[in-house]
Length: 127
Image (cartoon, rainbow, N blue to C red; front, top):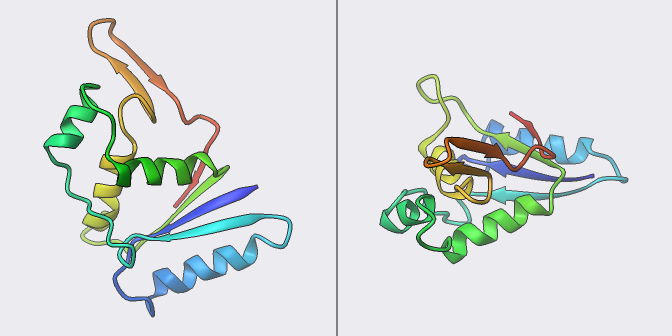
């Protein structure tokens, strides 16, 4: 098993980062992992005009989104580690999900055919 552990917190000394490290350690020697620190890597969470074109399947995803999708493609498990801000996840993580889990890759939405197909059913997600 290979796990992608995504951390969405600005402070590397935070409980979120500590928990991500403990999850990685708890996987044991027979499992591999990668930690994606969205803040340290300066991921841009803003859903922009280009992302909207990707959603409409008019354009290919930009390089930063393709890189994140490749990380997920390598994983059997996705672990999201984040603090709860006002009953929700931080905007950084929400934007990562909005941009990375794109139409055509994470799901296939066809309005004309009134069809919605999930494409990541093999991926186990843990919060």
